Image (cartoon, rainbow, N blue to C red; front, side, top):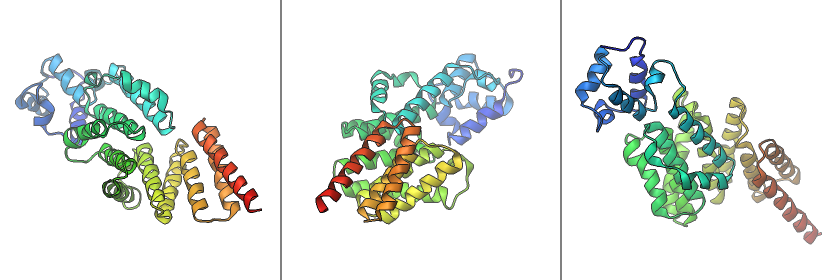
Length: 302
């Protein structure tokens, strides 16, 4: 017997979006037959079983009844805020979150992928143990997204690339950043799939770190093309989180490319304006330091 008003199709759509078979979804919760009867015939299992199945999909029973006030919403909002802070290079609150977070309490697959991506990227950016970094990313690559269909797989690739780059294992870093570069181009240049483009903030994360990597290899042409893709995406989606970092990276590339002083100053001005808008103190300090270096270099030459 089904529950009145329950949106079983929503449940099925989410399972298919996550590329989960019935077998994998019900593992450790119930039999496949129980799940199949629910999806095909509307025979609702016990509330405890349904609650666990929904949680694994990042849903709740209430959401199937159009009531979205639930604990999963709270967890999702917290993870989204941590992700925003990481984009803004606000590492201190993110490190505090990572130290206190209890991954065992996060059961929804989409939220678990987000959790492991955030902790893995934080550890990569702060030079933590490679074992810890790769453990988090392997949770995504080897378990939660085995078919490598989600944006979190690409973010795990970039996080791995960052780690190897910082450890000067450049062949391995190149392997992962090439994957990200291919994905970015397929998503923004040759693909119009809404399920990919709707992840635009995470795509911007891929773009920035990949552009930064190619700049470190002195491949300024490829780096600048990625920067322009990022700026265009920011403009079309009306978001500014990454504009300070993208504009500052463009300024650094211009300096290394011996661009005209007017071009460099314009890019630094733009980076500073967007940094102030977004309260990004890190970029504000970098702009000031870069201008001091330029000024001192000019005085030495004169």
